[in-house]
Amino acid sequence: MIFALAIAGCQREEPAPKPVKATVPHRIVSVSPSTTEILFAFGLGDRLVGVSTADDYPPQAKNIQKVGDFGAPNMELLIELKPDWVVSTVFLKPGLAEELENRRIRVFLTNQNSFEGLFGDIAKLGEIVGAPENARALVADMRRRMEAVGEKVAGIPADKRPKVFIEIQPDPIYTAGKGSFFDELVTRAGGINVAASLDQQFAQVSGEFVVKQNPDVILVCYPTRDKNAAAEISKRIGWSQVKAVKERRIIADIDPDVLCRPGPRLIEGLEQLHAELYPS
Image 1 (cartoon, helix red, strand yellow):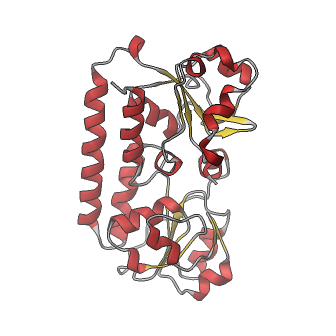
Image 2: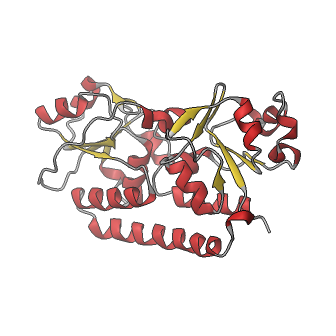
């Protein structure tokens, strides 16, 4: 699921519909974890009448009617809920936004591919749901915390910053390249993404690629069984000489949701990652 959210950047994007003036919505269906978290952060969880099966935070989201998978709701279930608006990321099932608009259900799609993009989408969603002040307050707090990390990082010279390999999926191995929010996340936390030279936002790489890059740190961005990702990575052929493995700097204890969901908790992920990269 985590990889599906991340790799969505490589899939076809559903163009966002043109903004439509409307009354404040009171019945909202959210079919992505990040937009659900944003609405709860506004204090508007009570307006959600449907969410996707992937929406599990905050805990109250688990009690809301499920309408299908992330970005791919069951249309019949969705229509039965009679929503005013449907919100999701731009990776909504192709053609669905147009179908909903034809049924006079308005759609808002976020394109959270950067911190600034996220802040902008939070502000837009706040306007739509009639909570602009809540949105401004949320963005202000997120920006303040982001800048606080930036101040700590600003004085660290490039040659003192750890080289980081971002592992999004273990088999086959996928990483995050240039232009991805993972790349920005690592950079803002004070690291250097060893795959930043890749033009793809998300790319499959070989074990040899990682060995050659010899990262100081390996960042695990997916859920792991029994939290044994570090042990499994250490067993890979040829990886015993990778600096991150030798020095046991495999970060696998940060909740993947705060790293992979471009929502309010992304700042929490940034703060935790900075602390892991600079433990002293």
